[in-house]
Length: 146
Ligand SMILES: [Zn+2]
Ligand SMILES: [Zn+2]
Image (cartoon, rainbow, N blue to C red):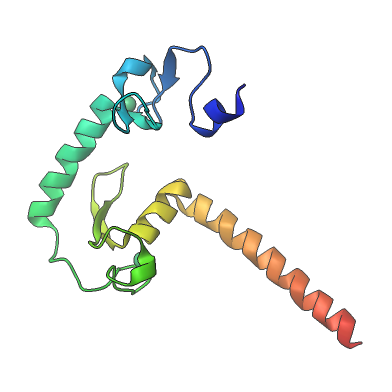
């Protein structure tokens, strides 16, 4: 496996790719490429059909969702904070399994949640990882003080 191809999530010499959402093994042409011209940066992890279905759910939810708050429903920060990312708007977050509206998230929280697998399980793993590190720090501190 080529390191770059691996980084880009492209299976070398493979013409198919498994959609993260529907789990089907589809030709790479069923995925939308991001990037312009000849430099195609990253293949979408969801197939075109799933992306379109997701867009439909989002636009439907937008009509019934509560008004967009000033701050993120998760971290309570304004998306306008300079470090928050280039996206200055809160994103509509929904449960990808049930299609229900969940809340309005800043880009950082939205990306973090999605990268954590959009699940409590993924978030708990991160929490456990940090807790273990913190407890190691505390132990080390105690040792130094003794
Ligand atoms: Zn799909
Ligand atoms: Zn946030």
